[in-house]
Image 1: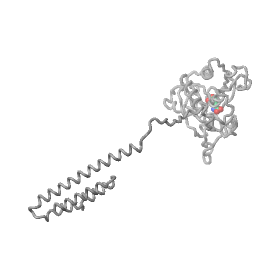
Image 2 (image 1 turned 90 degrees about the vertical axis):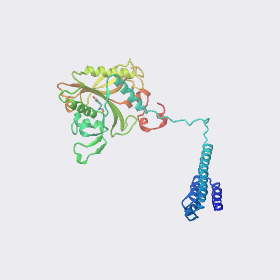
Image 3 (image 1 turned 120 degrees about the horizontal axis):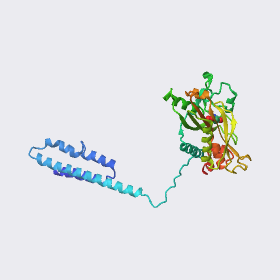
Image 4 (image 1 turned 90 degrees about the horizontal axis):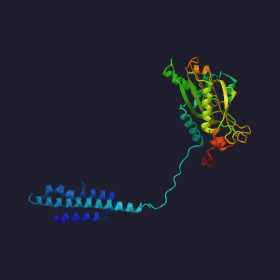
Length: 352
Ligand code: DAH
């Protein structure tokens, strides 16, 4: 009997020494310590052993079982250490190698210019109001005092997204940031319809026009709209604010001039020029010999537009403007073709 147990133990231990990995270790456990292992069969058969021999047989079998279990866990630990050692060996890293250079992204030049504009306006007390890029005809034109079929719409041939059954109110990509004026005024006036709060906001964002793409015009571009509404806001506030903006953007010496113009949503309307910051007004190629650079369109908010925004034009006045950061960028860096700006050529973008 003892002989049989010795054989079992010897056979088990010798096959354990062949085990090299975790799966075969598990197979070994099933084979030698599992339910149908010879040792377990032996233990199960102890009932058949004569009563007097039974305690000794039981003890001997148990000793073998304990020995096999100890050998198993010892082997498991040895395998774990070996695996760790070999992974340390194989996955060694050379910390002295030079690192891979990280390619850092950069801001798009238009983003840089937009941030310059908004930083100046923020200093002047303007909050940023972001408005949607997809608009209805009503917001993009009608509420801004462009009557249906008015020829002023020709300034902005549009990308229509949905027309069909929408009749006179198709959906389009906004052609300017001005519809944000209506959204903002309606939102603010809804806070207190009887006595709406004053407004001083900048509305930046992408605009879209269905145009021939040339060195001077793109089908997408940004605008920064400004809107100020309050009690007794006058054209003097408009001139002062926009001239101050020009000095902050183009330098303290920058003079400005205002020329009469036309926009349906302002009355009176004007365009502001800044003295050419390249030649100081003497005339050069950037200002095409005039000494002046056209910077923005502006005007006093039309009473109909105030009304459409929920502001009573008898009690409130305001001014607004719209300007193009791409154009400012082009002037600043003497970029002579607007198509570079959205062509996404890294050779161009990396210069900023
Ligand atoms: N929306 C005009 C355009 O796209 C720009 C503009 C002019 C905006 C005068 C204004 C303004 O708010 O008062 O050409």
